[in-house]
Length: 280
Length: 280
Image 1: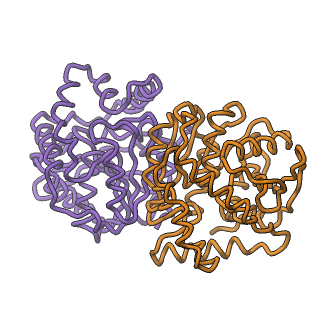
Image 2 (image 1 turned 90 degrees about the vertical axis):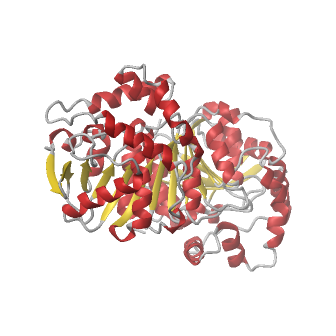
Image 3 (image 1 turned 90 degrees about the horizontal axis):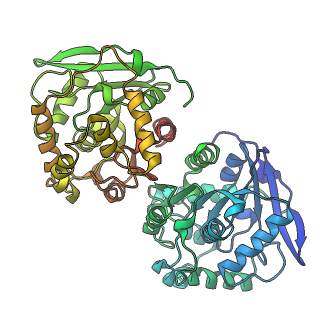
C-alpha cells in the first residue's frame, strides 16, 4: 500500500447526544461537498473499519463512521430490526447537521443502505453496498448456524473464518487486515455487548423474510461489491441486487468471501472514489 | 470526456506479411514493457475500436489493434472457427516480434482470448474480456436469428440495435460512440467482405457447441466486463465466466447491452488501466 495520511489512526472519537442517546463517531478526511458515511457490519464498531479503506476514501472526501444505537461506545438499546436501526442512524446524521450524504453500507450496513435509498431518498446522493443481500435472501435462514460454527474459534481465527476464504492467499490478506485494524491502540471502542449482538442477529435473520421495500425504486447511482465466495450473504444475491436496482454497477472480486473489500483495499478504494467522483 | 492524445485518429495503418498473409494493424501509445493487443468483434475492423477507449488505454501503454485474416484490410480467407483465428492472430503477433502481451478481447475477440489464456499461456500476461461468453453458451444458438432481426436496419440503427439498449440514455450513448468511430476520415479500413462475415458467424454459433478447453486453467489475472442486458452473449454467462476462471474480477455496467464499454468509456478505461497496472 502506498502511504496515505493516516486519519483512521489519529481521528479522535467524538460524541453527540440526540433524544437521550449518545452516539460515538469519528469524522475525518479532506472536505468536499458531500461526506460518505459508513454503516457497519454485524457486531462491528468504529475500530472495525479497515484503515486502508477509510484512509483511501478520506484522501478525496470527508468520511464519517459511527456506532449505531447500543453498538460499541454508543448508548441505548440496539433495535432488533433494520428499519429502526435506519431511523436511529438518520437521527444521528441529522444531529450532525448533514442533509445529503453518500452511503457506504457493509453487510448489515448494506441492509440499512437499502432502506436509506428507498425511504430516505432525498438525503442520499450515491450508495456503495459491500457484501450484502436483498430482502428475502434465503441464505439468511442459516445465519445463526454460520455464526455458531465459528463460536469455538479464537477472535483472530473467527475474523478470518467470517471474512476470508480458506485459500492461503486470502487468509494472508486476512492477517494483514487484522494488523491494520489493531494498529490503533489508543481511544479504541469497547466491544459491542452481547444483548446488542443478539438484537442485530435477529435483525439480520429477519431481513431474509422481509419484503417491505422495493429496491427497483432506488434511483441513486449504486456500486455493489461482493466476493466470489460469500457464504453469509450468498454471492449470487449481489447479482440479484444488481438486476433489481436500475442504475447499479456490480463488481465481484476473486477468491474472496464476506470481506471482499478488506482483501482488495486498493482496488476497492479506486473503484469507490471513481464512482463517488464521476459516476452518474 | 477529458482531452486525450488522439492516437486513434492519427495512427497510420501499417502492414506486415506472414506466410503469404498481409495483416493490417495500427500501433500507438506510450511505450511500457507489455503492449495490450485488441481482438475485435464480429465484422469489426480497425475503425470499430472506440477512440475513447483505445486512446484512454494508450495514455498508459502501447496499444496494438489489427485485422485478423480476411477481415478489413487484411488478406487471406477468414477461418470458420475460433481456434484457427487464434492461430492466425498468434502468427501475426509473433511476426511483430512480441513475446508477451495483454489481451483485450471483445465479443468474438473474447473467444480468442479464452484460447489464448489456455493454449498460449506463456505469451499472455493479463486478459480483459468484454461482452463475451464461455464455450457451450446456449444463447449462441440464436445468433443467426438475432443478426437477421437487425438486417433491415440502416447501418447506424443496426449498430445501436446490437450494442445498446432501447433506453433513451443508452441510445444517445450509441450515437456519441458512432460520432467517435467516424471522426477518422482518412486511411480508413475497408468493410469486412461478406464471405468473411459468414465464416465469423459460423465460428460464433459453433462456439456455443464446443468444449475443447477448460477455462479454469486460465491462471492469468482476468477482468470481465459486461452490460446488464446483452442479448447476444446473455449477460448471465459473464457470471459463469467469472465463476470458472480462478483469478477474475467481474464488473457489470447498468442499462447496457453488448457494447457496455462503448457506453461507459471513462469508467472502463480507469478499470482497465488500473487492472493492467496493478492487479495481480
